[in-house]
Image (cartoon, rainbow, N blue to C red; front, side, top):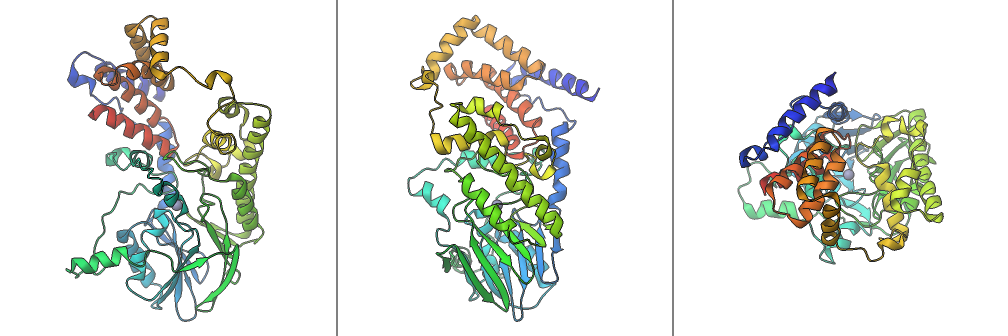
Length: 469
Ligand SMILES: [Zn+2]
């Protein structure tokens, strides 16, 4: 019943959206009632409720204050942090929470990898103190790989993150709360010295203790710490093992969601083969507790073993099945149908595609080994998209016929088909307002009915861009 009502609402707004008046063409077709996908994503917010979780007597993890988790480990005469979060404002809140637990000084920060959500808040914690920052030698590799070549198209990361969306359209990012970009604020509340503020936020951000070997044992403030190079989500990833506390900190090689083996914002190949091996190494520690880069920690030896093993085995299944299909000559489109996660994995919430997706992973594994050419000779030198569009529209009976079919598809909730059809018209007439409005409707239909947060953000942001242009 509910879905029929939603369909009615959608059709009602869509009808307005397709009338000839310019004003009504920009109307959003969004119904006010939540879709099942939105409800599922909203339920997910319980993974990011602000809380400092006591993992052991000496280990505390701040969840939900920042994009990533920040952990504090207490030693004899000081404490260390694992990861520094994304921004100074969240860092200041977490610092205040940690100060309620200990008055000992900060001795070191270990940064699990170079992504901004783990590294950009570091300076606020350091706050001018003489503190070592540990990381892998190739820290920041992913960013540097693109930067040195001048590759920079910020719209894609912005769409993935949903930063441009109004608050009511943001739910979360799948593995993190819906946060907005934060401008630097003074570390010292009373500071009026702009130079000093600038110094706080641009200095000490770079790690000064770089690990150039696969394993290193260190002791800081009496805490035994083992650092392991663990390529996976990034090549500069490390995981931290505390043998005394029996806690493993995985960085972003684990969080509760299907992993982001490929990021739709665009990245170099994330080596899935290495990722699987890094997870095996982590499993071999037989940890009592597991603190992921995002989402609430996994507490209890049996839970850690079950979840980490499932995680590794599910990725391994997808990887091996994809390779099997590649070896049979399958194209990426065929592989997406061929590689289906078995039910005993698909039914687990911690493997659900809130952030990454299995089909994107399959395409990326293909791309990592075979490159852009799908193997079908037809696609070696295809018609230009304009040539193809002209021919397809003519074949379908002209512009009006295609447009009315798009409207039929939207009314039937076939949003993907509507999007693929309207693209033929938009490729030839990219500035046509009615076509842009129809595509925006399709994007909104797709975005509101998917429980993958980054896809939702991307679809809804593109819809917003189409309505603004
Ligand atoms: Zn992260």
